[in-house]
Amino acid sequence: MTDTELAQEIRQDNHLAFAMAYDKYHRQLYAFAYRYTRTGSAAEDIVQQAFLKLWENRSRLDPQSGLGGYLFTISRNLTLNVLRSGIPTDGAWERMTERNSAGFLNELERRDLLDKLDQAIGRLSPQKIAVCRMKLHEGLSNAEIAERLHISVNTVKVLYHQSIQQLRKMIGAGCLLLLLLLEN
Image (cartoon, rainbow, N blue to C red; front, top):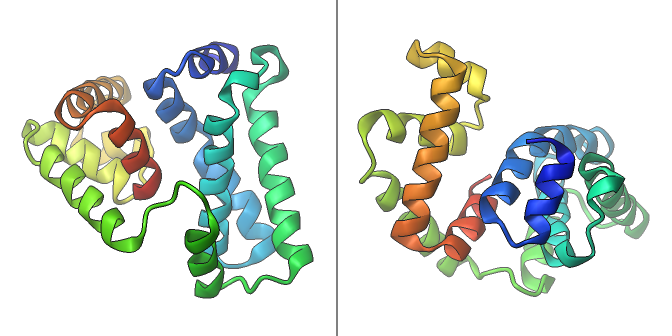
């Protein structure tokens, strides 16, 4: 999907399109935030916050403006806010973000949801389990997964897409979206 198509689908509450946008941009946004904060936890939090803002403001999203530019603008502003405020870029930032962000789950609920996702993934076919775990837990790209499993990149894409559809049916679309955000 092009960025314009992704943005249009996200505006229409399409969770799969949101997950595809996350998959497409989260590494780039992480690298950007890490370059300035120099800590993984702060960079991860910035990426999470950027995608949370994208979802919360999806009804105002202009598909013609460019999804990537929109996400980088949000990430830049969040990164600048961290640097300006002097928020420590270590575990304290992560704890403060979890405490203060409306909509974030407390750690116990987070673990329960992640366990639910792992259990649902465990009910998939062996090949889909492998693809999901490499993508979600290890953060591997489609090409890296294809190389490890000795299958084509297109097969990885199809298996992941089918897995997401099955997981949505097993645990619900809204819950899956939140879990995908928490997992990465």
